[in-house]
Structure formats: structure tokens, C-alpha cells
Length: 213
Image (spheres, one colour):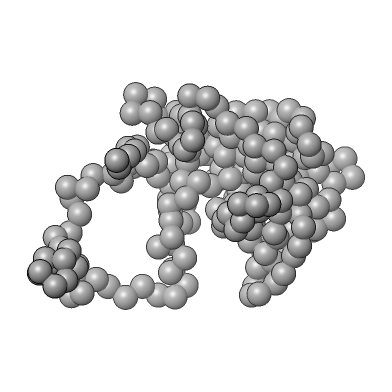
């Protein structure tokens, strides 16, 4: 059973060194070197997505955490997907997809969609995830998710061992109680918090919003 933990308590942060010329510097002796293979996790947490694609009548879903906005005008996102993934070729051929953002309730399904291959298993059947039609793309929504970003691929590049799909956002929708101008993270309803991927089988919830004047 997956467990989620809220990491939001600033009062538990390590002490800082404070001098007049260098205010609030953390003691370097308190920091450990991170292996390069784990360095990307320092950019976590960020919402994990369930990526849906449709090609020649077949629908597949995969969990993806390596997603990043790269442009506001036009709105573009980048998706990093390994070529060995079944979804990789489906997206390459269909050139459109939906990024569905799940909440805590779908943690088990997210794990399954990230560990099973759609080439040999019908992940939608295994996870019992219900679908609904997309608005501007052929790929479907996962109904139980909190938000949906429809996108169309505009370019692909392989800078390393993953293919970077650059896709234009053609539509986006979210639960009103979960998202305003940003994720609201209501303290009285954990089910409206987007699920964040910390690495491997570990997930988390932000749990608290800090709004500065």
C-alpha cells in the first residue's frame, strides 16, 4: 500500500547561517553530495501525470513525471519518454495526447501504469480507469483525474537516452475546487491535492500553500 506524506513544515528545516554580509546561508557541512543519477529528483516534487494516447483505435496510458512547461506563447510542454516505452511509438505516430493529473485516490493506478507495459497488458482494464472523449484531440481523458491537458506534438529531439517530445497545449481543464490560478491544495480535502512523484515508488502531497504579499 502506498503512503503519502505532506512535506510542508518550514519550522523543521535545517538551521541557516546568518551573517550581515551573507544572510541566511546554509552550512555547507550539512549538505551531502548527490549522485548524478539521482540529481533530477532534486527538482521534485512535481505532479505526476497519466499520459493517454490513441493510435489506430487502441488506447494506452502510462505514468510520466518528466514533464515541464517550456513556453508560454505558444503554450508548450516537454515530455521525456524512453524509446523502449510502448507509449513512445504510439505518441510518435499519433502526435497527440492528454496529460491527466491524478490526485491521491489514484496512487495505486499510477504505480501500475508506470510499471506495466501496454504492449502486453491492457492497463486500462487492469486499473479500471474510466475514459471520456477528448475535446480537441483523439486521445481520451481519464475521468477520475483532477485536471487534463490536451497537447499536440510539434517536434521531437533525442538529446540523451530519452526522446524529448515538445507539444503545444491545445486545451486544459481542471476541477474548480482543486485549481484556481494555481493548485489550491485545500487543507480540508486531501483528495483535491495533485499527486507528486518523488522518485521510484515514492509519492507525496504538498498539503499547504504559502502565498506572499
